[in-house]
Image (cartoon, rainbow, N blue to C red; front, side, top):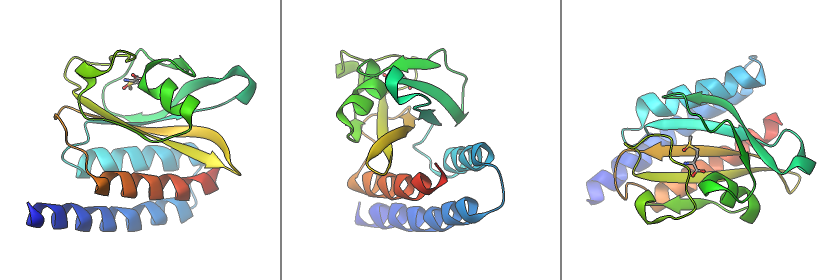
Length: 160
Ligand code: SME
């Protein structure tokens, strides 16, 4: 187990450097977000859908699907408070759901999804979007995932 945890730490450390490289690069914001989604989907074995939801108009209190990698989803617009995405936006807190079958306020994208993590992105203290990770595994997320994804979202905040 210790070895596995070190492996994950190392993977996240190297991915974080790659995210920095993407963020500092010359591409448009959407292209950068899209590259980050593809990178995570390809390289993290327990990430099976990776996408961004964006708060386009704060007054609307609604999340709009942005760049993503993985299967298309019908949940393109999600009001604050609905589903795990909407709850994370409302609470302005990271949400780690290790077993989506136990979550009553949940919007299913695919029956294969068994767990989900949501990390809000803030700009000057205001929520501007979220990073959403779906996994087909049960209880796959550790404290390392949380630390890594929260650091990624802090970095990405500079793009908004
Ligand atoms: N499962 C999410 C909806 C978005 S999809 O996972 C891409 C939710 O409950 O809010």
